[in-house]
Structures are given as structure tokens and as C-alpha cells.
Image (cartoon, rainbow, N blue to C red; front, side, top):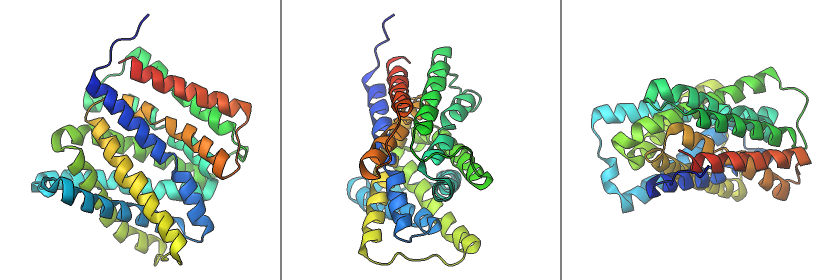
Length: 298
């Protein structure tokens, strides 16, 4: 059976979501190197979105100055709702990565497509078809195969790492659903800017209270990594992802971003010498097949 033609706007949305996922696939590499340079996860969790916000502020001021005009109701929705989802995700992802490593965090993070598929119907009126549900299950299976095929995966998760990883997955699903709600109403630029601003303000208040004074990175190398980390994985990736959510369904965007662990596995093989076993590469192939399927079939 031949697939239905995908309109140009939807196709662009899938491409944007996949490119965003490829950029996010580098997150573990950045985080591991920053931790090795002595930057604690709480500092990374705050510095990453703050630096991303600076890139957004400059870029939008030059290209889209109208972005900053928003009424009080819109500001409350974007800064509070989006800020809470993004802020919780930043903390949970960094602490989980530090506690249990990149492969285990990714395994837990990518329960998000299942959350999104289950919630997008009652919350957004976007009920996934049986074929879409099958592709979600297929992609999740591929993620777990790729994680099980990583070199340094222990037999079981610690309770702390499990909790933080599940929270990262739940918050990732939440801001995917939020983006699908907010972007058609406020535009991708306002959505990404004010949700990132809200996350920075919340993290700036909560993290010092919870973790004590944050440690500033020492030397130019961690700062260079942080600027690349924030610019690529916050400013650029989130802009692409929120624009994608204005074009395609939340469940489709969530499945498309499942290429992230495949990219992370390839980068870990090249940069961290953490190769995949054959079962891991089979998982990568299953992920790619699932993502292609969700783009080809509405």
C-alpha cells in the first residue's frame, strides 16, 4: 500500500523535528565533557538555558523584534506553563545523566512519545491512529534496543537515577504537548523565547535554594562548551522544534525526535569510544524505520 502524500508544510515540520533531535543528540556528549571538567549538573542545568536565552534575545531582536510584544495573559501562559516544563526537564536531565549516564537517561527519556500519544487525544483532540500507535511502539522498542546495545549499561537502574530519568521523560512530554498548544496561538518565536525565559527565572530561584551556591566554571574550555551547548541545543534546536509543533501533531513530532538516541549512539561511538553491539545497531535501524514511517504515513 502506498503512503499518502505529505503536504509541504507537514514535511518541513518533520524535517525540523528531526534536525532538532539531531542537535539534542549531542547533549550527552556536551554534558559528559562538562562534568569531566568539574562543572556540576546543577550549574549546567541553569547555564545552558541562560546562554540559549541570550542567543535568542540577540537573534530575535535583530530578525523578529515583534516577538517581544505579548499581553499579560499570553506572558503568564508562556512563561509559567512553558517555563515550568522546560525548567523541570533541564534539572531532571542533567542530574539523571550525572547519576546513571547517557544511555540509561535516554532510555527513560524516550518514554515521552508514549506519554504524548496517550495524552494528545484528550488534551489536544489529536487522537493517534492505530498505525501511529504501532509506530510509537516500534520506535520505543528501537530506543531500548539501542540502549541495551551500549557498552556501559548496568543490569539495573538505581532508584535515584530512575526517578530523575522518569521525571525527564514526563517533563519532555509535557513541553511537547505545551508547544503544540502554544505555538499555533502565539507563534514559535514567542513560545520558545518566553518559555525559556520562564525556565531561567525559575531555575535561578530554585537551584541555589535547593543545591546551595552554584559553582561558576573555571577556565575558557567549559565556557566555550557551554556557549556551544546553549546555542545549539536550546536556541536553535528549540526554535526548530516549536516551529515544527506549529505544523505537525504532537505525537508525530515526538516520534520524529526519537532519532536523538540514534545520533547520541553514533556520536558516543566516534567521540567517547563507546561503541554499540550488533543489537544496538539493530535498535538504531528500528528507530530510523519508525521515524520514516511516521513521516510517510499521517
